[in-house]
Image 1 (cartoon, helix red, strand yellow):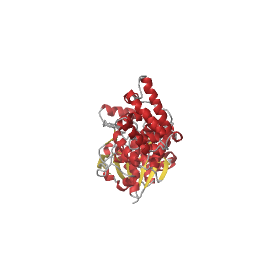
Image 2 (cartoon, one colour; image 1 turned 90 degrees about the vertical axis):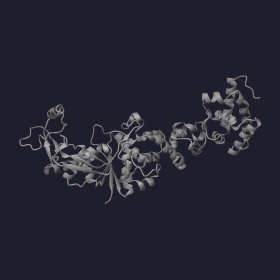
Image 3 (cartoon, one colour; image 1 turned 45 degrees about the horizontal axis):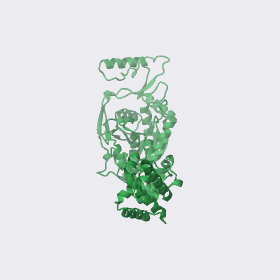
Image 4 (spheres, rainbow, N blue to C red; image 1 turned 90 degrees about the horizontal axis):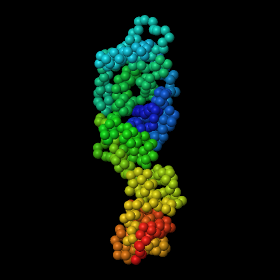
Length: 474
């Protein structure tokens, strides 16, 4: 049997973390077994579906690199097919027209609630033995079996039993003829040859209804695997209050797509104790048996840890491509500083996101640097004045601006002034970067450049004299 999975988002918003994980699991399973993933847009909710949401979903899928094999299909382009399926169910007696008014249904629900019954349709029109009311456009309801059980053999939750007596005759077509969600999903899965339905377990209760429709149309059940939900750190369903939930927001926050995919794969699935996977390793190892039953807990710190690993290990070309828009957005131009690969390489072991790389690289570009007040107060003191002046003279005389020579100057000044290296390097670091944190001082100076470094030393010296007019070089 050729494996066919599907990812069918509704375009009522962006591609969120839960949807991305569902897409990933379907993609991985199809790739693992040489199958296909169908991509379709379930856009029959016309009031809430938007073109912008469709594009947002496409953007998220493309950024994550989750390519599909068939589609995209749009349900709004398949209404003729759904009409045929609805008529087939009517002709076979597996569905019927219902003429009940909204008022009657509201009254029925109120009565059931008052008597502590489960609200459900009472089958009033199921076997209508009188002429239907004139001028009333009917809905179409599925004739649900009234006895027996539906056993859903779920690959995650095991056998889940639903009693047919608990299920009412659901509407499969509205009074204007448009199909409802349950009907369209089943017809699509049937027509597209879906063999495995891998989706969130919030759909588990929908499954017996969809099985009834599928079997009424003569179809064969697919394999079901309902994924655990994703919760926030507080144990509640992941939502906006837990931070960014849009896939593209994570891109904008400086995460790498492979890092996010790696994290999402482990958010509800495990393969021994392994935490970090390449895409090829995910494809080779992913299976439904590794999916956990319990809800997964989203942890930003863990995602940052994974992202940091990818920043440290990804090819430089990948990091440059991911970082370039952020450098440009921050106004950091290679024409006014080092090449991006040099700046990135200096920061990649010290940053958890691409945004952090860019932020830490600001001192390498442009001429002015903002002094951190606390760092300046501690390091740019009268005692540092002779250090900075000696460094400025030595740097100006250097024939070559390279790491070995720069390191040699710092060592020589330290020895001459009988100071520890840190007592020389830290005031220098603050003078040329504005803060006490940077890569090694020789790498930092290389990235800042001769002219900028000497100019900033001059500014720091002037700053010290301005703070303390009595400061002396000796």
